[in-house]
Image (cartoon, rainbow, N blue to C red; front, side, top):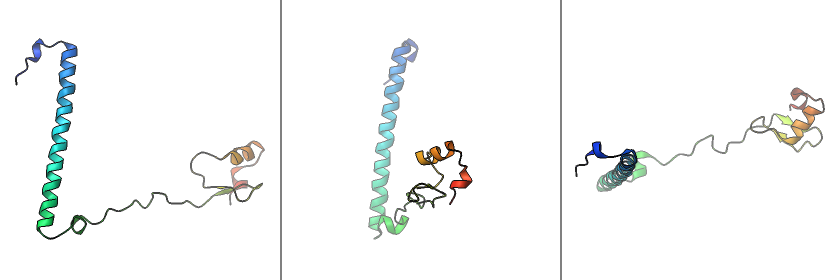
Length: 106
C-alpha cells in the first residue's frame, strides 16, 4: 500500500501518523507475546520452569517498610510522626504554639 503523503493535508497526515503508531504498537505487542510463548516452550522442553531459570519475583525491600518515629506529641504520647510525608496537625499546632522541632523529638 503506497500512500502519497505529499497530497495529504495537515489533518490527514496527523490521522495517518496516529493510525501508524497504533498499528506499530499492536505489532510490537504481538511480537512480545510470540517471543514469550517461544521462551516458555523452550524452557518447558528442557524440563525447567520459568522460576528455575529466572528465579521467583522479588518484592521490593522498601515497599511498605515502616520507619521509626522521630517525633512524639507531648499532649498525646500515642501520636508519633516519622518526619516523612505531610506534617500531622498536632505537629503544626505545637510549632505554632512556640515549640521547636527538637522539643518534639523522641
